[in-house]
Image (cartoon, rainbow, N blue to C red):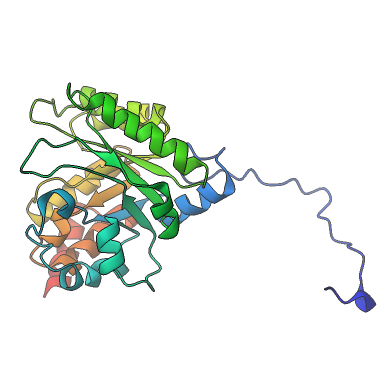
Length: 290
């Protein structure tokens, strides 16, 4: 209780000074509740508006794929250099140190593996996300897949319905099947469908004409790294995506399968947040990898 013996009347009200327009640094989030903005601010750096997310949820369909054989040895050393960690609840609970301060984007759907028909997923319980104090939930959409499109869109809007009650952002992840075109028309359609159904972040792929994909999506778009590329090419991918309107990257294999993952994630971070060129990024990578 305040000490009533020294109660002073307020005097400095800043009269005549108008309040600054507080434009939020995350695209499309200006009108969201405080809790949602707080979680988004953990993921997207308030100074740059960008994010370097480290994706290592691959094991939920691929098992111990290259670079993810031992999460404790291969991923934990990278945590300090990432802005956000994207993983499954099993890995989060079993392997990620609980004293990490990095926000978690929880893979929130599962169902099939690479041995069967992918995309036939169901949602995890929202209470798991709450119990694990995550900053976002990730749900996949299979747009253009006759067998799974409707189900995965339903998964997204159900996740948004539940997560919004607790001010947890949802990231829509656009899947690419064998029969799906990898072009701006497809990614623009898939990204917009994610946003229209309530996703506060969209993860998709970089392509020719990506600037149209990013411009037409009313929420931040982060790009997937996709298959492993040579380090310089991966840095060029990051640079081009950011210049064309991406709000960050959500990279996995191009980091943890690198010849020097610690050096690579730092180079990616510099390209995304500092705007250095791919040549400068590769030089930084080579210096750090020595």
